[in-house]
Image (cartoon, rainbow, N blue to C red):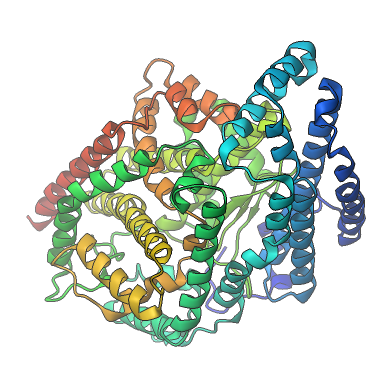
Length: 605
């Protein structure tokens, strides 16, 4: 697959480079039929309200009805979302996605009585139900998770009111997504060869790796010029969404939005604080890496647009998508034949939407429902970075596949806290493979730099995001207006603190918060950092073929939501309530930084 300067329209993309959604619904008409069927179920599921105290059989029927509704809803929602994301300018699929979103809100409202009604049952009653009805055994952990939050659940009517306002509460997030992915028009700049190239989210990431500094600078300044003109709109959408998080936490009797967000996965807030503390302590390592970058690029001033270009010059490695497929199979061999067989399914059965096209959602992700394939969206460009992206998203999708084929629907998903561990374990194993197979000092220097950049972007950068996210939630809770000026000032200062004195304080980088969708995800980003740290430990055990390391890892992949995330990771061999796993990750970063410095000295000679 060759690079293209002009993005193709969706109907111009070869089918082999697109995901196969016909295995979900053969046609949009089939989607409509399933949608109408679900509308009926949404109306009838309310009939179970008030029956939970009528005995274990009634209790079981209500659980099964609600889970059946949720299962079908997920399939409908995912299909509509994927159709919309493949071309966000397509009005048909915009409408379909809006329909699915509306139905999801109606379904949440229709079942909002369930949790409050469960909590009205005494512990003695619940214990009796489980003792007398063996068919309920499978739902024990599910119910235990609900009852653990007894004091935070409102009455059935109050929960119904909140659920019914779901579309309104999430309007700011939807506005951001439409503006950021469909309505923004980026300018055209010159590439390394003087050719016109239109900026897009995907192209921007590629150009930041360019070895031509003038191209990087032009991409950086032109992209942020667009966001500069819209900063007040973005501060409004972000502020509104943060206020929603704080309000939702307050009415559910949590002390903060963070406490509520982390409690859903039973993650202690100390895990978040420990991450910030350990990263702060090790910021000198990042400053040291930044200073090395400045030295090797031989620039008087190091700018933020210099932070992603390879510091090993022209020795970069590029992979076509076909080559990346082959390298993925070789690199992930330590994960065993069973794991590799799932990768083959992904490549051969069109789980992956490969090419960037006009209107396609930016970035990359793994998605899917319990009864669909675990699909992957890419915006492919030939680069080492996109090989890492492919391996990362495959980590998510294989995790999903294992979970759904080994767990019943009630536990057939997993928390984001666990998800990022699977994806970044793959990345770490890929790095080990490249360092093992690439002997050329220049190539090794490139791989080491890429790893250090990835570490910087995943642990240091995402922790920076996490710190910013927590700050704006705290400030909004105090009543501080989240104006664009306020957000710019804090973000600019935070960026300077993280990257240190060797990086110029580019005014454009203070606007970076405007384009980060994860700030709308409610305390999501910290899990990238904790996940990468845990993945470092797991990958090391697997590559070294330690006793039962692979078996323990596969157990984690197959566990889904059958236990609390912290407990699942303990079974995998990592205790994430301690700081050791983050410190161990920092040791790996320092070791590879040392090796890069030594290689650079060799290359100088």
